[in-house]
Every structure is written in C-alpha cells, then in structure tokens.
Image (tube, rainbow, N blue to C red; front, side):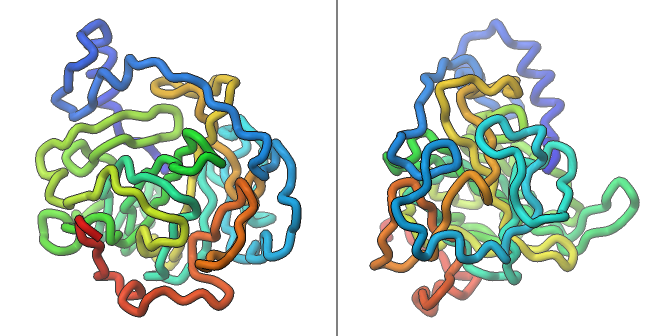
Length: 311
C-alpha cells in the first residue's frame, strides 16, 4: 500500500519549530509528531516467534491455507523476516499479509482493541501504473491499538475492507461512500491515528471526515465484527498489518513512534479460531474470520450491519 501524503510531509517539515498544538491545513496534528514515546517490551508470557510457543498447540495455526502474500522482508524489523504463502513474492515495502477471504466475509477482531483511526479510500476503480484497471477497488482501512496486556502498545491495521459496522455513516450516503477513481489518502477522508510504512500521523477531523461517523475510541472485543472483506478487481481479501512494541528502536521509522516494529503476521503470531468458550493462551490471536463451528448472529453477516453508539 503506497502512501500519498507528500504534501502533508512538506508542510510538516516547513513548520517543524512551531508549537506542538498546531493543527495544519493538511489535518495533521503536529503535537503528535513532536511527542516522545516510551518503549514497551513484549511480555515473556505472550506466545510469539520471539518468546516461546503456547503451552499446547491444540487448535493453533490450523488455517494456514488462507494465508496470502506476506510482507516484504526488508520492512520487517522484529521477528521472522518471511511469512505468508510460499512462492508469493511481495511488492517492495509491503507490510501486511492477506487473509484470502470471500468478498463480504465478516472480519473479526483478533484481540481486545480500541479503534483509533480510519481512512476511507474506497473507489469504483484504480488505474495502476502499468495501465491495468482494477475494478472495484475497496480500500477502507481501520486502525486499532491493543487493549490486551498480552500485547501492550501493539497496533493492528486492516484494509481493503468494503465497509465496517464501526463507521455508522459509511455507505449510508454519497458523502461517505466511494470516489470514482482511487486517490489514496486524503485528509478529508482520514480521521484519528493512521500508520503508514515509515510514518504515523494523527489526522484531526476535517472537512467531510466526520460524515462517516467513525466510532473512534470504541473498545471491540476479540471475535467481534470490525468490517467486511473487500475486493481489488477479482481478488477478495482482508490484509492485516501489525506493529509490535519493543524496547529496541525501529531504524526505518521517519516520523512517529520508533519503538513500533512491523512484523510478519503469519509467522510472528500464533492463531486460533474464535468461539466464546475457546481458551486462548497468552499472546495467541483469534483468526479474523469465522471458522470451525463458530457462527455469528445472523444479522452480522449482512454487510449493512451497523453497531449503535450505545451498543
């Protein structure tokens, strides 16, 4: 996923000495660019590729067949460099792994987490640099911060969604729907804390960004629906990209929290199917889709399903 924030970056550099509370015309909050961050270690008790496996592998990593292309090894700065499906080379600076899901499949929260941002880039189509037209081009992205002591400070991003029940106004009117041709990230369509390949920014509500009625600050529990898998051309999926907090700095970070590291979702974490009575060892994530015998309430399979502000 390529970042289109060049104008914003120029503006940031031009006002680097300005007071931290300034909000630019681009919508980026400079205070967050100037803040300091404290490192948070991965707990030794959390199962991962850099700690230890869970006590039992029963029910763990049982659906690797849905793993798509992994992240570019050159962008991974913590844990295994490779992951995802074998023989699926990533493009440069790719920092995610797709879960290969049918269009409209409910996407579930892999862990307890709080919604911190959204970026509505949905479009009818995108024209690639080689002239290929990808139609449709679903590219709604949501950003979350872990609320679990297993993964303090961890950032979870999921994109290429068609829609989300956490955006009450999405697809409900033309003001929060999709543009004709993909334009990438625009401040008027972004809200909250967003994470890119080498930077992270806070976008203040600006222009029409509030019309999507994003439930920023909402806690979602593991296994709850956060969105619906979208499509890029004839490829349907839900890519996840995850940053893990560590005591060592990430040398690739240009702006933002340098203690956060992109990891390979498929090989860094252990995964297990969610059900309300499933036992999750410390650190194990829930597969972000219904699997085994778990069934959501019928209404949550409808892509038009929305939470309420009090739900």
